[in-house]
Amino acid sequence: MPVLRTFPTTVRRLGSALVAALAVAALVPAAGFAGDEPEQGTSAQSAAVMSRPCFGAAARNPFGPCVDPALRLTVYPAPDDAVLEPNAPCQPQPRAALVNPCAFGAGGSSKPATVALIGDSHASHWRAAVDVVARTAGVRAVSITRSGCPFSTAQVVIPDAGRAATCRRWNREVLAWLARHHEVTTVFQSQRANATYTAPRGVSNFDMAVRGDTAVYRALPATVTSVVVVRDTPLESSVSQDCVRRAFARKERATMRCARLRAKALHRDPAVTAARRLRGRIHVLDMTPFFCGSARCYPVVGGALVHKDADHITTVFARTLGPFMVSKVAKIVHGAAKARQGI
Picture 1 (tube, rainbow, N blue to C red):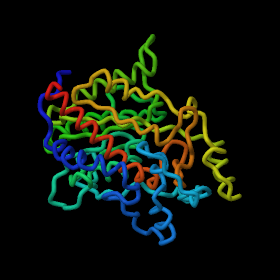
Picture 2 (tube, rainbow, N blue to C red; picture 1 turned 30 degrees about the vertical axis):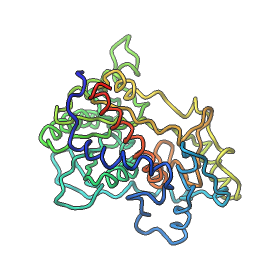
Picture 3 (tube, one colour; picture 1 turned 90 degrees about the horizontal axis):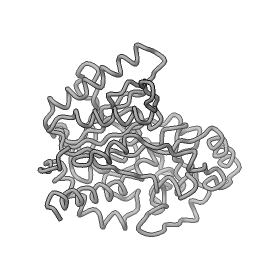
């Protein structure tokens, strides 16, 4: 893929807002960042927990330690409540066959969406974080996702043959939708790293996934001039989930007691491998340090419950990741600008 020669209007807007926000993100706690309001229906007690300076991802702030003893035994949302928690709000938009977009980010119904979040349900659970990025930059975003359906030209294995065929059709229609919507110039993309694909003899599942991801990135229309591939999140286990429930009920600390070995929780992500091979307009965004240390991944971070089920993160934790995603996107923008200038 040729080196990026022009920078999209959206990313220039993201750049101007996010580069300015980069220094701020190092200092401002997650709950107090732009666009990071508590969800509707949040109780005063819950809002008080979420507004504490070290709540959630802020507890693993790479710019400096953040420790709040008051959050030591906190688990929010409660494990039994988390499974009922919806993803971040999203306003339905006109449907185009299988493509069922919804809008989020900066307000204003007349403002066209210039950012798209695309993938399976592992993209949907990032919406709360990407929402913070979009609001910070003052841009409108659109979510285009389908559960169980990775954004890839590889044929995902789904027990129901009809659903598998629908997934292939959805992928084609997403590419066609993007080709019609030239205003969308920046794509955030994520999906489950451990999906299984149909592969010819002698080709591993991982290599088949990389091929499919590479092909779909190359098939994106030229109007999509920046793609941010968000590395998939660690997976939770039923053992760890039960451990958190017991610790929560007994008012014991769950963070270390219920942590899972990183080697078991974190899978290699073929989308990341494809992105790093292509480079150019394709960038990698890795939020793993907020989930894991060098040896273990944590089920509770800064009092925030990380997973609502085995493989989806809570909206609460995702939103606390937003300010740090702002920082990382700002670095991507800055690095791409330097590469464009040959620095």
